Length: 225
Image 1 (tube, rainbow, N blue to C red):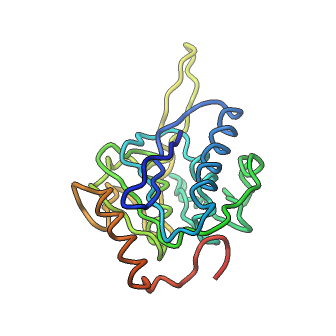
Image 2: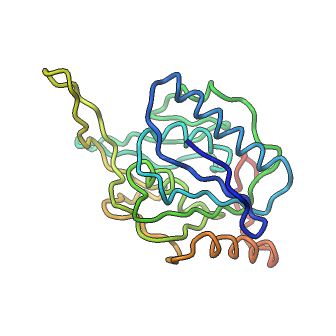
């Protein structure tokens, strides 16, 4: 789930919350997030804030596909299995691919934002866990992204649900998260800037980048240069 919050110093904020549900519900969640992103970026913006500080995990794919216009094209990261298999997570032609296949949630949406967010501030904290860490990891290291807040829970793993004979199920960790630079994330995600006032600090960073020109003119989202 996600919600648009009151802008901070004029910088729009989207709060990304934990979510789990059916495939049909995932389509609706993906569309809702993209609609919020498109609304925020319907006018020119220097930057945007994505708040994952209370995202305790769940299904990461609606978030990743919904936010895909903010991601650069190419390799975003991967999951490394116990058999040392690299399950690549990529973006090509504005779509998210997993293990070489277009993700089914790509079919949920076709609309792209009118304008790019040239700076992306991400907020994390100790309640950011699992997919609430993985999506920021896939964004961190992108040259127009900076992460603010406190270290995360340290649970950035891929889990698989297995059925039990008694009708229940159990989630077991089956893979580790690898960032876009090939580094395995085995501990907590560390913010680029630790702060107890992440919203204000993030907004100030975006504004400073706007005022200074930012020198962040490398590969920007939307597949463009």
